[in-house]
Length: 272
Image 1 (tube, rainbow, N blue to C red):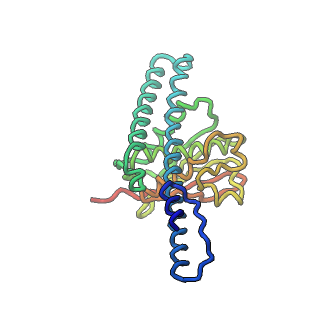
Image 2 (image 1 turned 30 degrees about the vertical axis):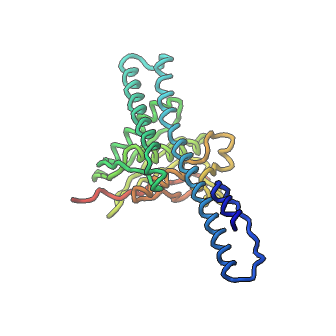
Image 3 (image 1 turned 30 degrees about the horizontal axis):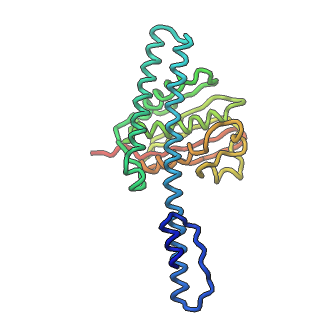
């Protein structure tokens, strides 16, 4: 027991204790000790995974900035449009700085939660602007991206930085799924009594049955994506974590060989 305690102090959690004991109290103590070691091990892994998830999402604005600046450098865009691209790149830079600040925030690791800076957001306008910036940074992307919603307001209270992370991760997932065949992607918004649902619909290859329970697991990328798509498999798990921090959720609503529908649910703006 003494040696095991020393191992724990050094950060070694793979503790092996003998079960060859007669006294029930000592056996229970050993069991509790091993259980504590396992929980400490899980906690340390969770911290590493959360850090990895945030680092993964830092790559998204960097990719956007790189694409925008490359377009200006290569004279793909001219004059006024070039100025617009530079302005978008600056916005993405600001977003990156805010994300880095979130990474440095002690609450992320200390409290086990992400600090949300919520604002009043019109989801329809927010998604349309996000798609416009995404299009500017991915000029090679084919197919239409449409937004459909009723004329009623779709207002939520959300952190704009993290909300965009969620939507971009699902959009990129939909685009990768549609890499061959029908490239169109739809954002379909619907308002419920206490929530707003955003269905992101692609017409790609779908998610195989055996992978459907795994796609929200950290580091899981799927058999078809391991060689074709770069990344660590953290986009969807981290997006679900962010959605739940907002009081909502993210799930795979349906999937088939004709495509998939991911459903983001967010609580509506609280009435004063």
